[in-house]
Length: 288
Ligand SMILES: [Zn+2]
Image 1 (cartoon, rainbow, N blue to C red):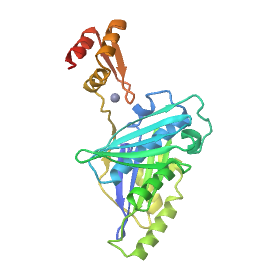
Image 2: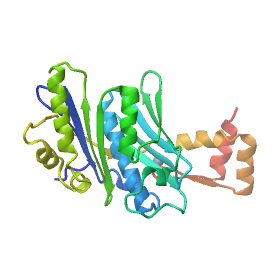
Image 3: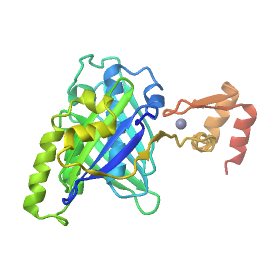
Image 4: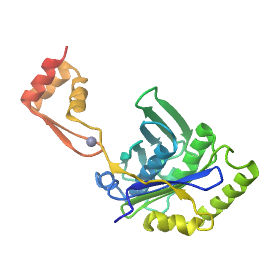
């Protein structure tokens, strides 16, 4: 059985170091296949999906987390979302001048002076947003900046995207509780050095347990039950109806008279919602 499409948390025993690994394939296929994305944009989108999956596993909340990066570059918008129970979706907007280099600098794609917003929308309680400038050369480096600012926990990420897959590894040092500062510091440096030996191909292609074994067989981490990850879109005919109604009576009347019907397709999953003459008439009549 494939080990893809699950995230796996792990803890290094007798220390305050934890981690998480994720590999996605079937769950990212609808996202990567929704548009004719250039390979580098596919790679970036895949990385962002791995990142939000890791973050929802690491930050404690029930609800939805979104990563949104915007700039003046060829990729004008990068959007990835994950729910605490493993539902993901995402999209990117791009222009024709996407660079074709294999490992582009993040600035070559999103542009200079880009911003990344991480928004957490809990099912209960109020929304929280953290914004960081895109100063790093990779998405992983920018997310490490985010963790430094908003979580204040030393956190490292390795992200990979390619061949229709997404993968990521996260290591985090928690406040000293189980072990003393010196011991935690030593283990932290040790596991970081080991994780830095991992190639992106290994992270994408090897089973999760093989990656963990190859890296950490000297100090094997304790793994918890894996959590499945799947593609999940939250669009509905009801939401599209509300969006159409928000255009207002005059605009809807104009669509009815000039076009007779309208089809709205979801940016995330490409699902079409068709509204014919009768549907449009009904929407107009429901307006106050
Ligand atoms: Zn949708």
